[in-house]
Image (cartoon, rainbow, N blue to C red; front, side):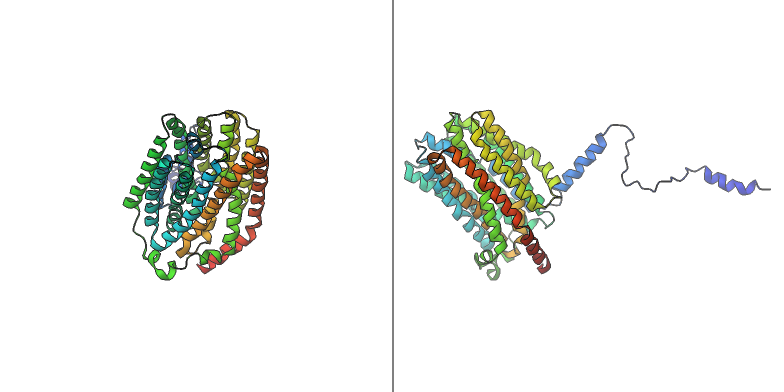
Length: 443
């Protein structure tokens, strides 16, 4: 009979039939309900892992310290208004701001040498202690000359720690995570700036001295975090055979010098948001609170948008993104000339903030990838020095051009200069690709 042999197939048929689709499904959906909640939660977790994951402890130390410090960074952003309260006129303001910019040229150079020769942590601690001391001198200065001297010391002290912080990030984050790490560092700066801008205008109404107190406390807070949580320096940082070369290694790198030039152009444009935009707001009869609102809008847009923008832009050529962002910032800052009310200034801030969101962390990551391991702080100091040059030029030329040739001449010049910097960035793409290939092969 044929019945018995058929029992085995029937037993097998009692089991679930094999699926014609290969398992496992590469995109399983364990929730058959139409609700997208679990899938959305997975996407959020995946995005958070891409943006925040893979970064070691030293990075999070400087990240948290930066947030603490930037929350109280109020003296420099509101310096124009403080000088006005001291009776410094519009034609005298460039002298004090120029001294501040000159100090900003010295600070990164000292900080880069310090961080590579004596250690990242020591450089950060020195900068975070020297900054409130120089702010105290600024507050106690009796006249224009002493205000300018104190501003110069403040410019140097406030920039002393930045190469060390950037070098900690380059040391701790691998090459594949540096762009994200520097983007997060830029994000931390804006988290603090959003808070500082929101409270700075409020504190001014109760006395400028509060700005100085809060700024000093948060600087010392970063110093405490660095002293307690940053690990001891690797011995190579104190090795005289690698750390005694000064800035010769920087000056011999032609690609780095070219990046410094285009960085100066972009930073000259962005620096106007800190100094000549407040002048325009003040000249339209608006209060310091109006500038505080502009600062808050800028920082909030960066804080909210940058994590999403970084995840999307990471798949794009960073030099193309950098060039496009430079042009967008230039258009937004130049549009300041069309603003006449608080709302108008806020709308222009939205435009240049979008460019800042796109550019966040790119230049720093490019320089970090170019730098040899023993000179990372000095390479970052070169980039910080470029920013200092841009600030110096902006502090001296910007307000002077604004006062003599008129606001229109300044804003048209800003737009042209920023677009030219973006074009220069694109021109560096082929040479940068070859330099990165050489560094990879050497490593």
